[in-house]
Amino acid sequence: MGNLATAVGRSFCEPGPLLAVGFREVTQRMRSLIARTTVVAALGFCLSACTGGGGTSLPFAGPPNNAGGAGSTIQTGSNGQALIRFVQGSPDYANVDVCVDNLAFGITAPTVAYSHASGLFVVAGGIGHIVSVYPTASAAFGGAGVECATAPGPFFGTPAIGVTTISPAVNVRQSIVLGGTAASLTLGLYVYTDPSFLVAPVAPEAISHNAAPAFSATTPTHGIGFGYGLANPIVTPVALTGATNIAAPHPSAANSVTSNSPVTSPLPSVPAAFYDGLGVASGTPVPLTTIAAPAAANGQSYVVQLYAVDAAAGGLGLVGVVEQSVGYGF
Image (tube, rainbow, N blue to C red):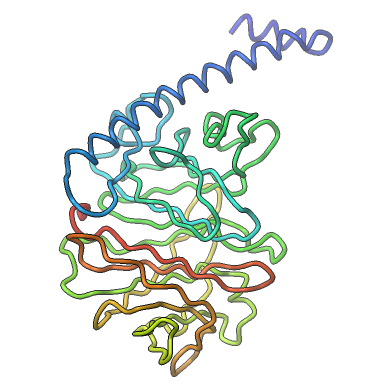
């Protein structure tokens, strides 16, 4: 502390010492981040190799209690786990990096491309975690995830796009979406509380999220509708029960979460395609964006997460991902 204080005192006339102290601190944090990433990768390999099940292996945040804490400090107050998924739903950014506390989100890389969703990620439930999203760092600055060392603050002068503090209860699943656009003043982090699967559903189902606040503001009902088709391209649209007019979501603040609710709808069978469109007060929404139905995972009940997201030039996008409903239930 004495050396740091001396450097600060001299910085007005001799900035060199202060910069050296700052450089050493950043270097130490980067080394710590690399070490933690190595441990995380090992955990991910073990899980993938030992479970032997179908679907995507579940990434772990790291020791000692699967929490995104600084270093290897134990985060007290948790007696269980929670699952989170991140979706990049803002057309303002091609790619973003995601941090949970000071740890990169995911095993191999924290980068999520526009209109894509991450895998599931484990954090310690029952306590708070800071989620920070940044523009993807270039290789010249250390590559993806290097921003997590200074999260949620700026990284080399670049502030976070969005920050929120989640406090998921034990045995809860959440989706966190970077949604909206800066031009429409809707850019932010939108959090959803998703179903948890103590018992896997016996029939296929879809879970629909309105994560397109900019587009929703322009629709007559200020909502978005979802549906499916038995053929692709869709010839006869079929509305998803209860999901014909989901209201625009509310963003979360930096220090607290506003939880939005998705809608779960039954499916008679696995369809060929899903779509989203303008919300309608009654009847069937007209398809605007269509995607092929994601393939079912081996050994999993078919549960698909649907995220309506904003697209460039005021358009509407749709992200679909098959949920883990067996083996990662609570």
